[in-house]
Length: 95
Image 1 (cartoon, one colour):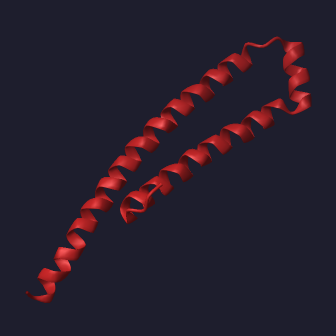
Image 2: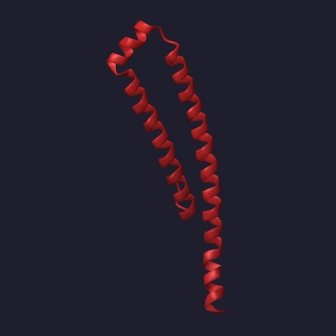
Image 3: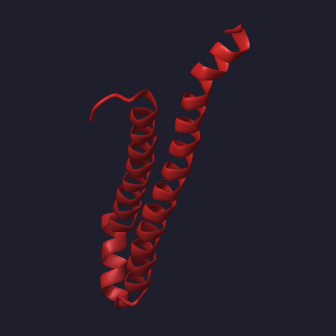
C-alpha cells in the first residue's frame, strides 16, 4: 500500500461527507430562508395596509425597528442552525 492509496482511502469518504453536507445544508438553508422571506413579505404587506393613525403611532413606538430586529434574529438563527448541523454531520458528533 502506497502513501497515495492510504491518503485517498482516508480523504475519499471525508470528501464525500463534506460535499453531501454542503449540498444538504444549502438546500435546507435555501428552503427555510425562502419560507421566512415569504412570512416577512406578508408582514410588510399587512403593515402597509394599516390605517394612517395606527401606523403613525406604531412607528413612534418603534414597532418597525422591533420587527426588523426580530426578523434579522430569526434569519441569523437559521444560518447558525444550518452551519452547526453541517458541522455535526461532517464530524459525526451526536446531536
